[in-house]
Amino acid sequence: MLDEQSFRDRCDSAMTDLERSLSPAMERYDFEADFSGGALKIEFEDPPAKFVVSPNSPVRQIWISAHLQSFKLDWNEPASAFVHTESGRTLKALVADAISRQLGEEVTL
Image (cartoon, rainbow, N blue to C red; front, top):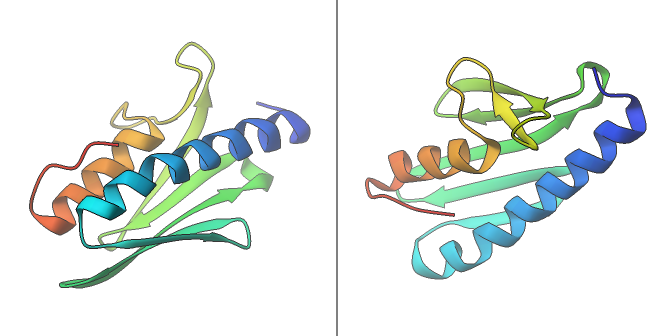
C-alpha cells in the first residue's frame, strides 16, 4: 500500500490528467466537469446525471460514482495508473466508458 504522501502525489497527478483530458471532450459533447474541493464532478443535462470522481485517502483509492454504481480504483505500479481491479480498466478508461454509456456514443479521453 502507498504511504500517504505517495498516494496524494499520484492521486493529484491522475486527477489533474483526467481533468485535462475532459476539456476537449466537453467541447465536443454535452456535459460539464468541475474540479473543486478535491473531487471531480461530471454533470449531464440530457438525460440528467452526475458522476463523481474522488480520492479516498484512508484506503488509498480513487472512487468513482456513476450509473448508480461505485468503482474503487487502486494504484497499480506496473501500469503506473489507478486501476479498477475487477475490470482492469484505468481511471481514464473507466470514466470514458461511463461518459460514453451516458451519452450513447463512444467518447475517448
